[in-house]
Image 1: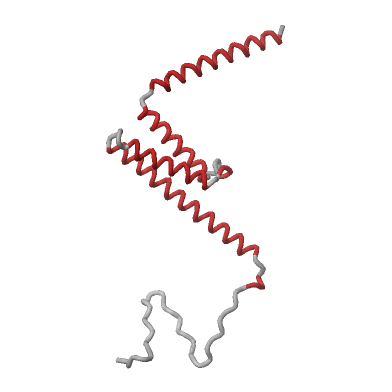
Image 2 (image 1 turned 180 degrees about the horizontal axis):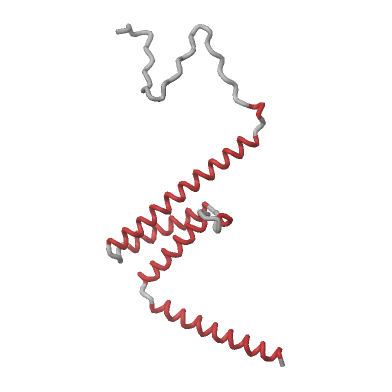
Length: 161
């Protein structure tokens, strides 16, 4: 008896799911293409943010190649969509693109810094680069003052003024 109730409930849910799916597909078929573009742009920007791994929730999904692809696709859709949208809407999309590109550049720099830091931490301390030997005939150069502009070195072939 209980198995029969579960089956009826399952059949009812599946019928409801199929009906909902059919209704959604009909709505999608009736949407103008410009609305599809907006939906796709929103989806791509959300994917890019997620793949950039900017928050604690998305850090585990960080994939900079995927983020770059989403950003490039977003940019391509802007170029298509701007022909069908008012300038103020296009400006907003371009600002979003700029923010995504800046976030991507920052994420790439952070990843490169992390790789360099890991390489530095894993290299033995005994393999430090050798320091060049000072020339015994020349006095050591004076320390540069951070507030003073650098002075050009005097050319030995030209007379001093």
